[in-house]
Image 1: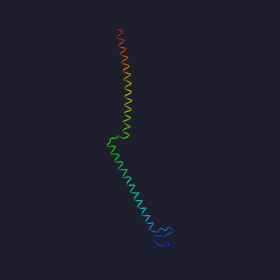
Image 2: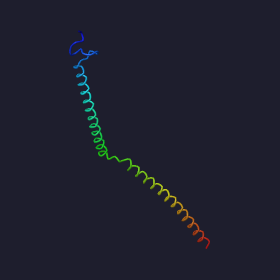
Image 3: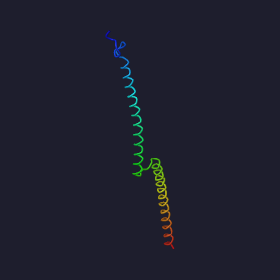
Image 4: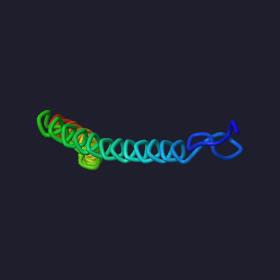
Amino acid sequence: MANDGPFNSGPTGRGPAAGRIFEDLARVAGGALGAAGGLKGDAEALMRTQAAKLIEEFDLVRREDFEAARTMAANARAGQEQAEAALVALEARVAALEAKMASAKGSE
């Protein structure tokens, strides 16, 4: 018969050797995917380490520290504007009092 033998058994013509080849290929592919996953984790860890070194080297600030400093600067700016307004009001009062005293001396 034409289908007899170890390589031509069954209706598909695939024998036990073909099944073992596919199993071996599946094992190799699975191992390669596992290794690729490990490499991905290693690459991510390396990138995180390098990014941390760059941040440290360039003396960059964290976002939360920047936001805190920005809030403090805005509060200081508002306080300065209030102090300037109070100073203008005081200067106006001093000028009015000086004018009143000058007119009182002149009427003597």
